[in-house]
Image (cartoon, rainbow, N blue to C red; front, side, top):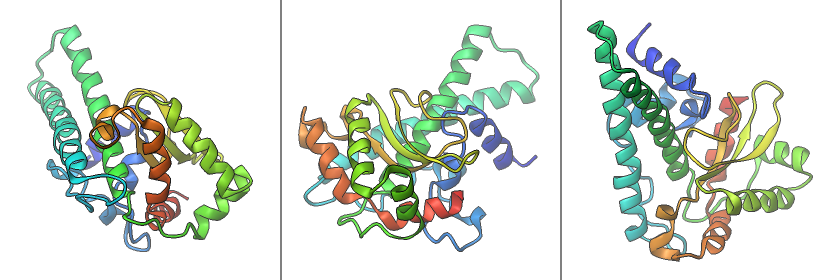
Length: 237
């Protein structure tokens, strides 16, 4: 098993974001799927560059920069450190204290999921949202009745979540779900693939919105990159 395949298996096996690592850079869904994931920090070991350093009317550069550097970058550093220690212990055939081993396992899972979710969040933003269209719009309308009904339920999910809210597609039954996660390693359905992702931790909006989480969630809806979302859906289905 290659190093990338091994890491992909270990991360996907956590279940919290199984499948999400596979859509972290889905633009251009007609290309070879393997090439779509090469920019992820889980592959390169370096933070994925931002597509937008600011989004006028939604998020300032002062809001986005520390979010990307400290929280996303910090998650990647935490994942890499935990993964390296666990890998070293395996190769050296050296046992780790059970409590430390458990902490490292949980850190790799949580931090790895944080990396993927942040990449999906940042890559899914647009200065101005294109009109939802294509396969994913049809799927949303079939599942929720209309785009407006989905949007209402998604915003309700985001407002109640402490960490993340997502529109996901499940590969077992092909259904769409709005799900919430209060911690990077908790909440999402096993194997579900995130399509629309919003970070609702305070660090994602507090500089620009202070405690006005509802305003942040409402404005997010006008800055979803539906072309990216549709590409993710096509890759997942």
